[in-house]
Length: 82
Image (tube, rainbow, N blue to C red):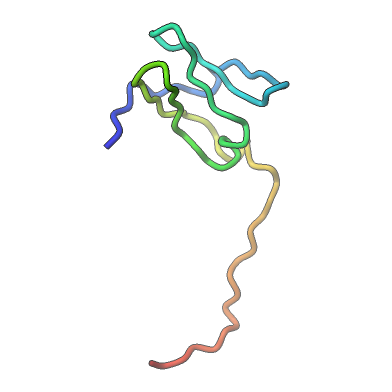
C-alpha cells in the first residue's frame, strides 16, 4: 500500500515543452516528474527514485486528453443462454 506525501496541483509544476515533462521540486532537493503522455492517460501519481515520497496530482484530466474518443460498445449482439 502506497503512502502519499502530499497532494499537489499541476499548476505548481514547471512544464518543459522539449521533453514533454512536468517537474515539481521535492523537499529532498530533487524533482517529482511526470510525462505529458502519463497525464493524457489519466495518471495522477508522481514519484522518483531519489527518495520515498509519492504525491497525488490534482488536475483536470479532460484538459490533457488528446481528443480521442472511444466508441460505445455495440449492444446489437445476440445473447446466448447457458
